[in-house]
Length: 439
View 1 (cartoon, rainbow, N blue to C red):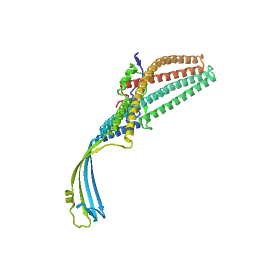
View 2: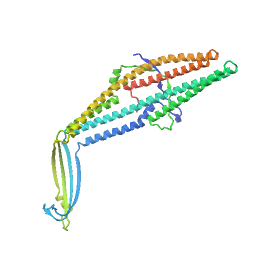
View 3: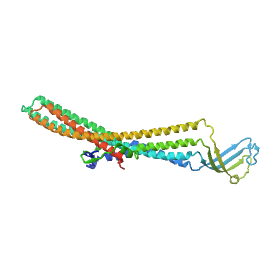
View 4: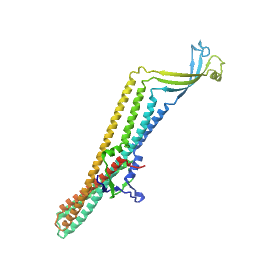
């Protein structure tokens, strides 16, 4: 495609420290560090990391200690003779055991793999949220620039209307213009003054939205830079080539891929519940007892030592019937896999649509910019000629108003085309691999 030397970038301008001018890159950097949704997604990532630690811990032995004490009143078994007795007895037990599952149908292994995939998915979710926030900031910043440019155009038109109003009053005093012309110019000036106020209100609302996206203090002043024309060469690529490259790093695609991996491992883990489980363990225990009606008995330390015992155990658990809970869980996890596959396909199609839309809009805005540039030049000449004719009495005040309004609309449309081209170009560069924002 043709190379197009173009326009617009956001210049980095600094005035006095009390009134810093924010570039779009600085706004995006601030937003991804302070935006509430980004912070919430960071907390979600920490949850995934905690779940991964829990999955790793399931491979470690489980150790527990226990202490028990009880009073026996009435008929009971004598711990010393192992016969029945009616003597009240205090009984105290101590134990320490360690156990570890040896085989569980690979459930722990698959849970760990799923947890690792969830951590990667959480990182992709965080990056996707940061990129989405940066994109919203870029879009809102562009909109604010548009309103700022409209304020400038409307202010210029108001100044011209004010000059023509003064000139018309002077011409009316010498009889070259009538009162109707003066009234018409006053109405034109009032309309232009209203338009400046209206555009200022739209600009203020856009800045307020930008502050909200950035989580910037509402009461603090946020001044954005002016846009200046700059040579910018853009080479367009085929949609398929951009898509093939973008799906390798695009956060939404990576998020869907890791989600599919996690769902597959969870599905395998659920099927592991159908297999028998084997576990091993070891422990040590001891006891102490005292008959309440016997004044003298073996000391605590001696009993603690003499009654101590060690043991090893192996356990085999075979699932037979658990009211179809296992089969239901397997079915649910299989549906999660299908759902994740559909989500991945949807996100892939959506990415291709977004790229196609960006390429089309970029090309259209390029063509519109070229045509609107020529139209603004023609309208500027026509406006100057109409004003000159008005000064010479060859045109009416209505002709002047019509032509100046046409020029104002042309300038606004040109600015909109330029900003649209800039926005779509930046998005295309993002799909090609250029980050929207930098740390």
